[in-house]
Length: 222
Image (tube, rainbow, N blue to C red; front, side, top):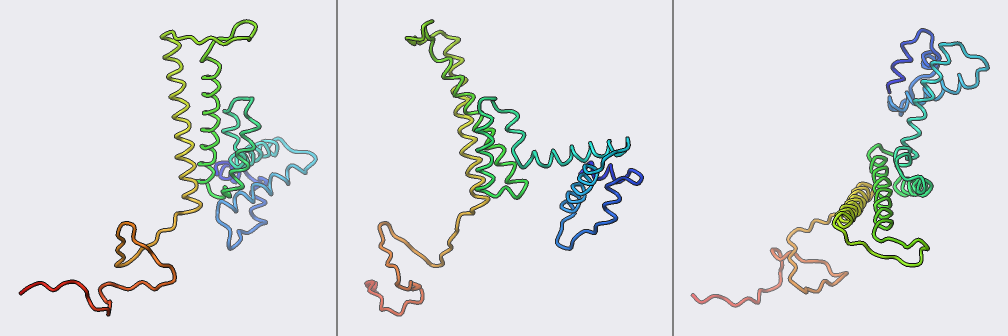
């Protein structure tokens, strides 16, 4: 954490005093400890009625650090880069994905952000395609299609963008699902399955090599 290291260098900073007053917990990582101390120092300054010049600078830095940390958890980046008309939907989608997949690791949060961004991108391309594929009369009573070379090339590029965005959604979603719900792998020893072979449940499988049943294979002539 950049601000954590910078502020601790300040003489008698609020954060440095907080660090002296609070020990790191046994089950707490260094990053969690730094985050907790930053939050404690922020609220200590936040509740103070009058701040000095140095305290104001420290408070601003602490607020920026906490804001960036919170932004990573609420999808601030994909929300900021999406179309204005879709921002509320993006917020909702991000919340649902964070709830479904627990967004409790940096890797999960990155994937969720990228899924939301790809979904927003697909919407933008869909809108571009819809608004340019035909020409409406002035009274909006009839749509006429244009087949000019430039228009056709433009629609081709937009359609490619739609397909690319949809591919990203599929790949990223599958990666997130595999991360949260790894596929079950079953290893079978000495298992041989012929085509259309029936498997009876509840019957203990027999190892062919150790089978005590007589062999019905014809003997080879001497």
